[in-house]
Length: 425
Image 1 (spheres, rainbow, N blue to C red):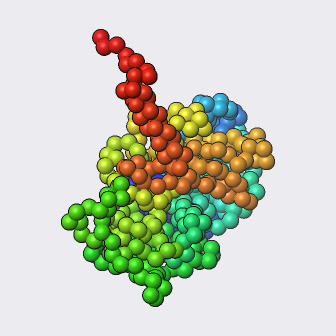
Image 2 (image 1 turned 90 degrees about the horizontal axis):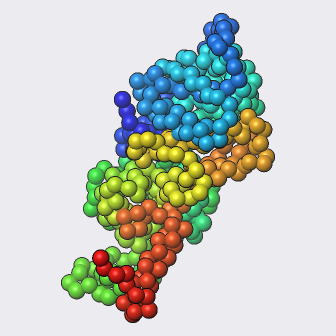
Image 3 (image 1 turned 180 degrees about the vertical axis):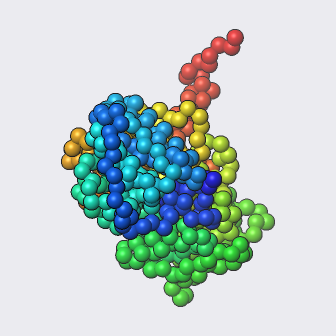
């Protein structure tokens, strides 16, 4: 069974375990464009009662793991908000079963539906003409839905690539080099970034297919300095600005306005980053971030790389995050994103069910700030960067620096005698 990685999320319609250098997103299978031309028998109600229906591929060999994690997050949020009871409808192949399960849920008294999860299932449901209750599909649509009762919410990696382009343009960067690995997911990320970058007025200097040629990374075809202004290589310096004796010269700084978009995952990026000019701004999606727990030393190679990810991973102490319980057993970062998707999916279904779209949105979600555009819920993740082995937002960095300063001041006061030390036992 394929494992999921944010995953884009996953993860591109959701994150998947594959990663930018492996197989394409398993939730992004080729989808049919219309409902199969078959006559569906009217379902017989099975213990009818008002409820929220959750349609997931829990019997699928490929998607059961992801579905189980999303279900856990959905149930966790339901336990906090305590609305209608939940009823889960499991499928093996959403593309073939989703309409029958949806009709069964309606017959059983469902007042709102969440799901399906895969793009196959979403494409089939989007073409179904009889969607009569608030329904939240948990993936990005290939085509617009046929009902104003059908909404979409997911973790598409392509959307993150577009948001990265917007962030880099806002940072006054205008010449982009795009580095891809040739995988289907990497190509999708590169294409989404390039489209948004050009829409924002940026220039794509080059798109490089990385074939493990590490020495060539030091000579990426970034936009050059204006003639006659090229700086010379400089000697390496320490963190305090002092020259490091016998250090090899650093390459000349990159011309202002250049940047690199890494359409790859964490492991590949770790190997690539040390070969890049240290003055070149580097951006990537949440595929870059494996969390701030565990092997943090793995993040040191990604120092100052910019990325985006969700509050669930970047701000675990935020009040809007802390209200929801984590899974009983620790989850891998890609699974944490799916769990967070389940949490926010329930919250959005609750908003739709209670017709609160005008008053409850934008939503301060655990996956990001969520707004509604037509029938699509849009998620804005947090901008972040790597520093000292951690993925940090500006706010978390400021909090860490303030805590260090307070600790240093307290230590100094103790040494000066203004605060007596605690007595030893």
